[in-house]
Length: 277
Image (cartoon, rainbow, N blue to C red):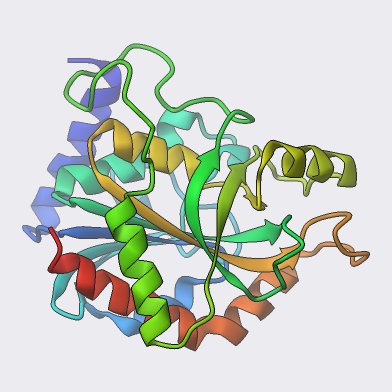
């Protein structure tokens, strides 16, 4: 047994000592979006710090706990707070939570984040459904010995974000009358915000939004054959797109303004995905 898999199994063994709940959907709440938890029926909370060998969130606004329960009628596990590469964790550690949720039993992973808008079609507060991603600016979470129990050595990434899940999100947004943008998400290492020159480069590469998470998690999930979808909340326009200096305080303020619509869009989409397996 590899060291990676042994660590994952120890986390899972602890999980089974505190719960026998089997979720179908995993949801990761991005910066400023932790308030979504009020939209679900929580039956169990597991702080990350209680799980042996598990990485702990150190960023303000990332609470650091798993919530087990139901989103509508769909059994779900929600990560209220994620861990990031810029916190000093290895990529293996950053995607350990995703792999643990897969071990718990999820078949769908719903990713959310706060992101900077690069596309000039966007405005602060927009929701962007992620259609594809650029992860070339951070290490792949699959570097190193391949763990065959987790997936094959060279997984295909043609459809990282499942077309059928994207259609569900698109249709749900129309039904709920929630404006929805679509675009390509680019992950950087952080923690510094990007320079205007870097943003111009990312835009030239085809990126519509930029952030410091998500893409590596999507790769780990696709490695395991899990369906993935994602939504970015455009919390600010990226450096050089607007003249405003960037601040993490803006992230929470924008998330608070869009919390009700975000909750409706995610909840209704997950309910539909639960019947679309």
